[in-house]
Image (cartoon, rainbow, N blue to C red; front, side):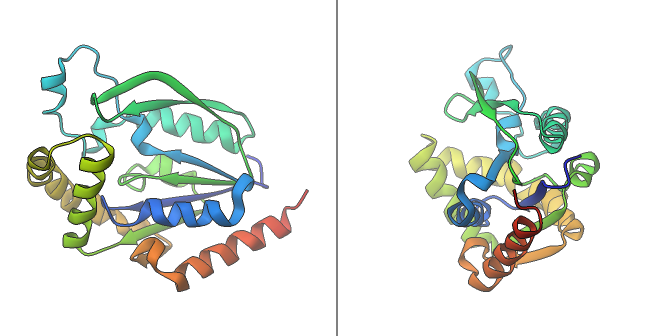
Length: 209
């Protein structure tokens, strides 16, 4: 593995603030950062009709092709570029496109269940769990899925009650114990952001070109 590469895992429940925290880090360090999102590794289901894909449980570990993500992250850690799959939430299936991802000195791995898998967990140097109140997370989920993913309010609430909430309690919340740092409110926590940015700055200073 390349010792110049720092891998930071950012986990937490849906709507907890993972993306905001990720964006804050990217804004600070720009081209030094590569992002790998677990959401892009949902399994392909070409064999199912759209109606049937809508009924799948997307909040349990088996919904993801995590073994592929482990392989890709390992490749990045060794300095090799990868072609990351792209997931289309409007059709509940993988797109035909891929994203060419090149290794950079900081790799952010983001997703609700990235601490649940031991192999994936072990590839991370720092593990951050973003925490937020359940009501706040639900409100953010509704805004995101309706405005950005073309979902109806009814479908979002049905999915939340059927799978999101119970799977959060079964898998996501227990994975918090694997975190090195628990951050309430994610990107809206300036003290925690300053600490994280300081740690990355030290890494970059120690492993400069």
